Length: 414
Image (cartoon, rainbow, N blue to C red):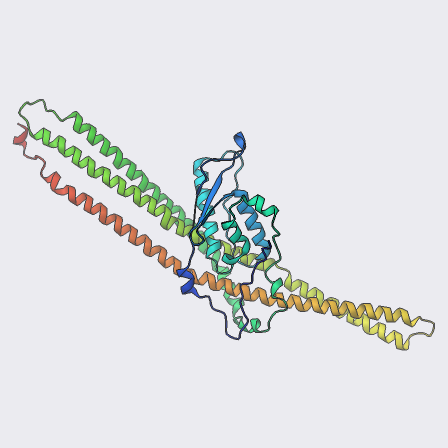
């Protein structure tokens, strides 16, 4: 089986290619992940397996962390100028539950970023990663995996692509690059703050549970008054149970709110933060690429060999009689052949440079369209806050008449 990467540029036309964003948003796949029931390995060297479920493809596979590392390594070779997501970090030694939970969420964001990208999602290796039922290391041994970069299949390039690139592409890239570091830091700060908010909600939920348990215990302790004919203390005792029940319900609502925040706005903030980091790393790779310098080197070499060729040709016609003409003819043939090969290579590098610009343009279009997901994130966050606030209000409102019916007259405790 060959897993060569398909091109994401499509057919070349005079009209600029458009991302069908509406259709793309409607068909966004979702990857769900969890821990496999049992760890594999021996003693302290046991490793965690992850269950990867693709709803759109209706398949479930089991993968190791090293499988994700291999996948990213191949994608980095095929798509050097695409926004590739980051993997959560490795850890030496025994990993605790907190670390494994963070890694699971990080791997989930990694896979969802891949299948939401309009080009990467169709890569055959990613499809196999999500669908091959066997152990991935075993599948790799029996599969030819191409690591040829995506530009190779597009050469020779259609001249139309060059006309599709906006004239201000460099300015757009520079503006994005200038603001990315600040945006990333702000998102990191917001993730940190929202994490703290979520933890405080969890703490409040736990405190409400403690208060509820204390009230129920108090009701049991004080259900019988030392005054034989006292009914008010019994009513108070029953009221403790009712207040405790509503307090316990508030605890459950806060727990649900904490989970919703963790799985919702916190993960959404991290997803967009990861997108910004991927774009910044892409632009940094662009700055390190040697297309321009290689073209300069080839141009200088062609000019130098062209001068040598002219000198050699002149020597053939006007050189000394005792010089062997065949020697100069052989030299001119080698120089001419070298110049032709270098001119072909220069043309290839120039075309790759255009493909690079075109790919970068497509990537920043994709990044820009993702701003719509930010709006959706805050809509969902506000909706969840309203829903929880309403449910908490309803819970306390239903308790209000009960506490107002509790005995308040001092004569009742005479």
